[in-house]
Image (cartoon, rainbow, N blue to C red; front, top):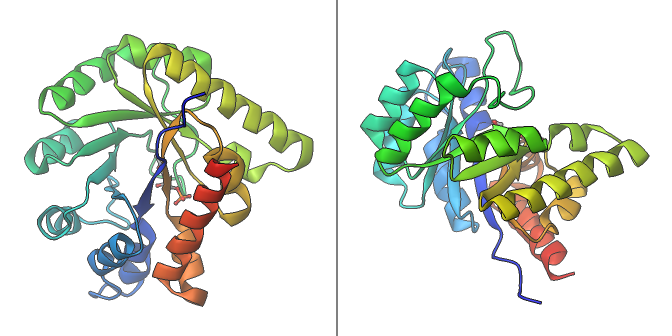
Length: 246
Ligand code: PXP
């Protein structure tokens, strides 16, 4: 059996910006957090520029591009405004996510199958600019097939329902993620996962051999309050590596 590919860790720094914005000043600086994340072993930095700019700002994206050498994964809604920003900054990657103003966080995945007419030209423009495009989807076979059909090279599976469930319900959600990751591999899609992952929930997801990247943020920023950002990231990395070895 061939060894699974290395599992990358993308550290999402949105909620460092949330804390900064609570007071409207410059501290804590999310770009300093990104530097620390890189020192702690992050393989990339993920940031979500929301339409309402509730955490990450346009200036943060410019600074991340200028000051951080590791790949930037820009999470964004599939809107004309965001496409223009992505084409201007040319991040390594864009992850298209559904966005509703009233939501607290990204609830559910994109409806790729239903939104094909809107999404397909956006994916084409971003891919044409050399940006690695991923679509944030529920672990659902119809959505994966639609992602493949519109030319997205990558999907990111939403792990929120798995992280929130318990017991048998959690095992069922994990099985959905495993099946979707296997389907992605069969379709030739690079497969990522993320949302809500914490120390207790990361292992079974990290163990899925066809996953190549996890994006994790909120838990790490919260844990940083107690142990520091670098330690929190190193502990997460360790759990991912242990699960991968098993
Ligand atoms: N992946 C995607 C596509 C997301 O939208 C988010 C949240 O911004 C994450 C991963 C990270 O989720 P969390 O902050 O809950 O770890």
